[in-house]
Image 1: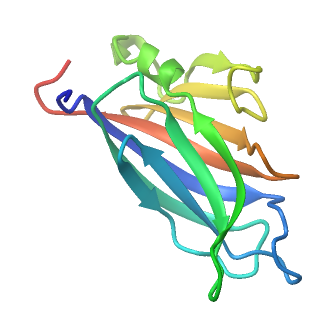
Image 2: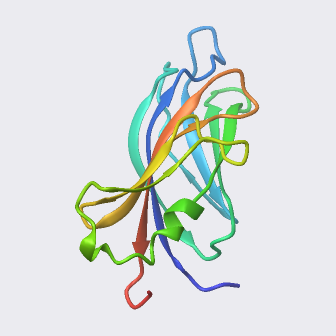
Length: 163
């Protein structure tokens, strides 16, 4: 059992062109999993381009553990239908945490992560220094589904007393 390393705030911004699971669209929600922990957004009714702007905070105990993101269509009378999944690669964000932000101006892009076969990025992702925090904006392309992307923002929160 590792101790708590820090907190990762994941702002689930929106879904883009999500898959239709019902005739009238889908009722999507997002699930984040890290180890045994599971967090969910609210359900957005009848939307394949939902806007959440919801912040989910994960307690990180193991920096090598991937964060899994899944999208589901909420169904009242049957099991919720899967609408794709992705993994969130937090390594680029964690790699900049040791940097001294004194010399970094607000809004500066510290590193860019191109989409590759190793990540689920739909577009280039930027790690920035913004308002006193390291932040990474990303758009994930969902796997195992015909269409759909999820826009996220990651923000690392150091615990008091940790370096």
